[in-house]
Length: 194
Image 1 (cartoon, rainbow, N blue to C red):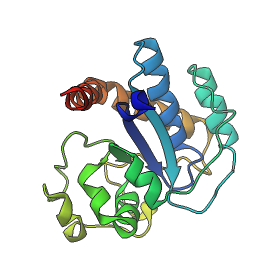
Image 2: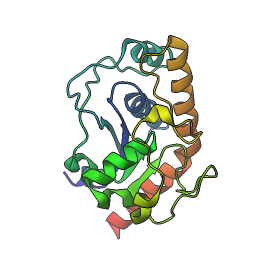
Image 3: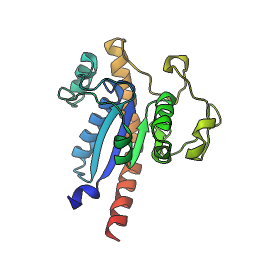
């Protein structure tokens, strides 16, 4: 369908696709609905092989309290096909950047950490501006080893309060980047019509 080709496709990536990325997907979909914007397609996936699992109960509850319904969400594993469908990929930590790089290095050209988008610069350590140089960046093998302020911490195994804080952090980041997302979607539509 021609209209679908013009949609700006945003992919959120976390580990299990059961907490952070579904919350981010739900938040952005809610905001798009509130703003009556239908030129987006929003989806999420996880780097861990957990296809078909429901979100954690705390994630469902916290999201529900903020007018986001995750009850029908089922996790899906990240794949090269999913990466290639997206116009923009927003990851929660460097662990996810590393997994994306290993799966499809070309996808890094459109991949950012959610907390640094639209820039690839971070103040806590030198970060390459060229997407192809991600392999020279400091990449951790275990998210828990890093306390980087540029990561959205995984709430899995935590309390309801941990999930609530995670949701609010993601929501704040999506509000921050919302104007840039609208701009990028408009740019894609302009190119499609020129």
